[in-house]
Image (cartoon, rainbow, N blue to C red; front, side, top):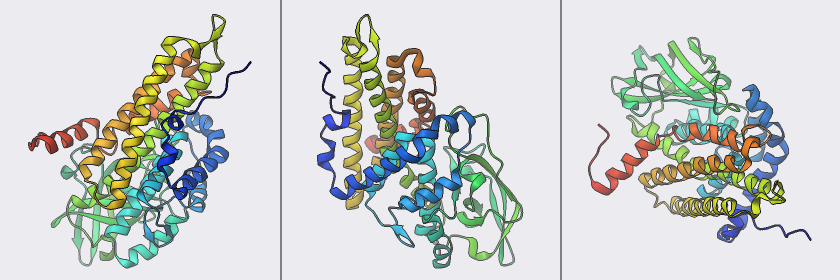
Length: 392
């Protein structure tokens, strides 16, 4: 007699009962699209290091997930929690797909929505929400990642124009973007600029030979005397608070997104262990396997409860940015540990692209670092709890 199918790890925690009907519907819609359109191709995209970003952007725009947590300009205006659940379902497919969406919505679109002029918003946000235009976000430089205040990219005044010179590095969507939000030093402080990518002097060579995020476009941005009108500057902010406000939006999505990768790994490992026979009984029937699965399920469930709590706080307007650091640090750290442990359950099968676990683990190596390294988030939390800054 066959054994009944047990609940999935998050079902075991009763997570669905904590969600509204709208939130469940959003998660289901994204999961359906991912299953139909994305999952069948991921192994090939990852192996080739290519992804049809423009085609996917239009489909994701049709689904309504690009800038979905923003109000107006063709954006859906959903709750932060619903956005987080969409990120979870996207990253359950691949971190690179979630990166496309979060860079578009939480970095490029949010920067324009939060700090841009009415003209900039009207020109770009409706097209970006529809996936007709792709955006990227230029902050990190070859020598300045965790310390963006040291950036060397410079914007100088020349009459009524701005002229930008410098380089940005590790830019998601860069080579396929229609618009780049670029941050640069000025005489007044750090400012953001809306840069159409067909502007003379702008180029975005693709970064290749990656071992992580292969189903994602990663680029360098080169700004060689890029001349822009005065209206290209974001008028709403001067200083690092501008780009950091955008990074907090992206980090929030990662709090949920990383759990999607972990969930996919754990569900894969459980299904594999139930089917794999070792010494005349299923691998799942051994104590060592069950101990691993139990420990991973507990960490996944705890991470999900934390993400939902932070989502409710964000929707209520009470979330502190340092708490986002807490969520990002914990959930990505646990997700990569789960991915690695799941690989051990699959044994040699776990190293192939037939199964998603090592692909997720490789991707999570990047997620562990971008939008703030684990060490930076540890120091943010340490400063909050001790009152002492220890970054230098």
